[in-house]
Image (cartoon, rainbow, N blue to C red; front, side, top):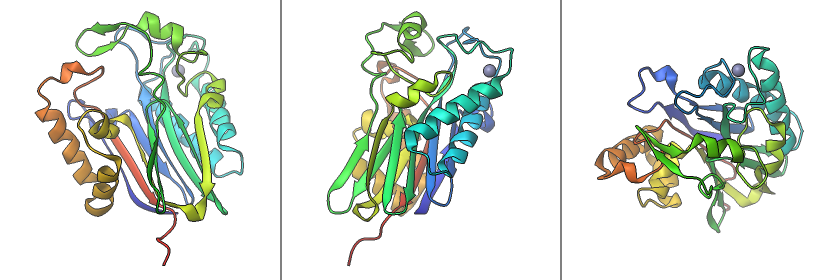
Length: 266
Ligand SMILES: [Zn+2]
């Protein structure tokens, strides 16, 4: 597995670059992307830690587990447990709005490639000769909850509290290890996979909001690099005539990892 691109950029309206709530990590045969599942204004979620701390802890533990031979679901389950243990007694992890992160990771080991997606990070799997398949967990988009119209249009937190990490709702990696069992997982023969791209929703909005295709995005990242992709995102966001038609922020942190798995067959 060869990492071609791996980069993150904070939303331009963040006060400091280190407030970026996305993260990526890469290892010899794995890669991961995380996107902090943020707090609602005025809601602590029972936790004293910043989202960036939770994302960093999850990234560390998932990376450690990906270096084992554990199945991908067990990797995430164990990493959530370990992150919960890091919080300490001042955090109430039973709070239904306890902060967490959405996740996408891939591991190429032996003859097999495995991937996992939970929440709105995406894994784009390019099969040799068979095109792109985006692995997308859209359960949060299907939530039957009112959108509240404040500075940022979000779901009503009271409704999210009823649906988050609950059957029939949506799942994030945070304070409920069972969320791992609800992740989207897949695997393929290594020799059938050309490239894999992991990204946060700050990148996939090029497709979801701005009419790009996955092959367009993949090829731009491969040929021109992640910084060129990030410029395209900011240009599209700036040119958006009505950003408040979307749930969520005008700008978001953006992260992508692009890995080559198998070279084209001769
Ligand atoms: Zn905490």
